[in-house]
Image: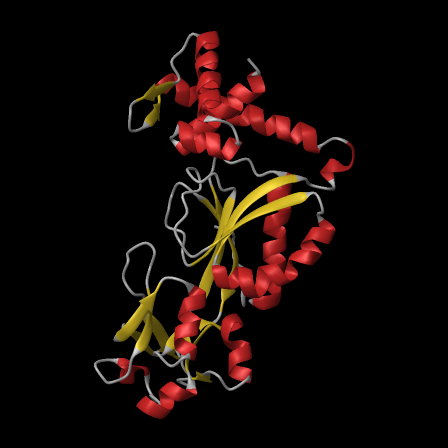
Length: 310
């Protein structure tokens, strides 16, 4: 039995909750992963996992052992990356998940410079607005807009996205230009709905005028989506009024494809966070990736005030 492979297999099964998922992320067969864990249990003479036909649960002994295994694997990775020039040149595969508009408009255009700086980092990038199970999907970190409410995650605030309200000229030609946010309430006007991945409901538009006047608008819609690129596309073809980050709309406003609405009103900014599991080792490659994201945010959406990381 290769003890390193056995420890890695056991840790991945605990994180994924499944031998099948663990095998997929390790690029091994399910049989091999099963045998490695069985051999580890036989050597320790302790039952680490309870297996049923539907799920795998870690035992009390297994949970205690897992915490130590994670530290051992992290120490081994640090030992590897600490040799020669590896400490200044992080290397290895990094699994991340980022929102599709941010990936398309900000991260991917800047990726060649990141690769020149860190040529030995291999990025496996999930591009979506879906909720990601960091443990089950074996993802090192996610970049997400909004507040991070999951107490099981470590979240670092990396920036704030300014939000604006817009409509396409074609929409305004048909429906007229609303002059006040309340014009979107129980009228003929329509918004493009954005579906929350947490609740499945459309998100309201929150605006304020100075310190005294605030309003929250739900609005009526004929189409609602759960992806930022689709949301923008629906607004561009005149399906309704949008509330979205300014970095996504700046070029369209400059070309006259979107018109800013409600002068003097401001939307709350959208906080951006990098989140990762508390038991996931913050390796050198993850640290430099987070630092790079902070650099990108400083360029595209600088925070007006300094925030303490969450």
